[in-house]
Length: 405
Image (tube, rainbow, N blue to C red; front, side, top):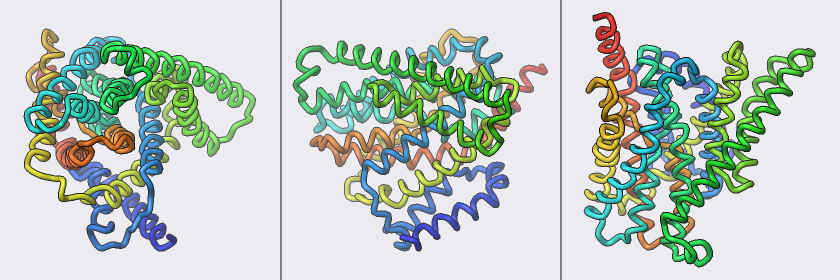
């Protein structure tokens, strides 16, 4: 255990030394983390033999996503968001459902042996975008604020919205009696959706309001020091997540709601307050991707075939991009802006969490679902990671030239 801990610690230290330089290249953090996990894991040199169960992987991924969502929402630019909220609203209300429907259609064509609900589960697992993998884009100042905030809000909310939809399809696929026997799929989805969002927003806002008041009071009286501020913010994010999950809502919705509110309440000095949380978020992200690379990727290569790869490619392109083009129809957006919005729909932490949840149900098509999800995530990390900086620079330059012209 100590040998493996030392290996991960040395890797984390080595990466931190060159992180600033790598951030300016196409090789971003998750690409390096995942590659290290695969190379050092059982499939590679066998240096990392991580004996970790599915529940532990899920917990790590959930906490990482909770922290990233809270931090990204806190850093949202409200002056831009107020002017352009209609754009992420359309992406969520129209783009997300269309993505799931198109994913179901592609799945039925490529995997005819799978049941309708199993295909729907796969499509829902791969519908939400990843705030962590998209960070290189939404924090890049060369990208126009309208597009950055649209992607930020979309990735912050779509995973929470997909949670109740996923559980609806899981209940129907597993033949659950209870709720599944007393309502149609539409009724179940609406019930779970309202519950997840309602509880998430209420708890996220309530917990954050109390915490913000406590922090202001402590700061005004000199009760809190800088090191403890760095601990308070991650603790607040985890509290929003855990309390909401326990209450039956979506912890991801709670974290994003809490983050937005916290950013609004601390807008004058939020950069200093959030610095510690961002560093911890990067550390959690590193651990998550290393564990995923070592313990999950390429562990069952026999389930990967041409259909799996084709579905993964379609999921990252047509299944994501066509709904975005439809959702933003009528907006005054150039073609390159629509392409940029459509392309940067990376899959990552939310899909990992969903993957662990689904494997616990032991569905007949589990092997295909696992293989397709893993391949999609890996391709996304590579494709979106390598193109984030170059395409951001290209798109930013075109937008600047358009504005100057």
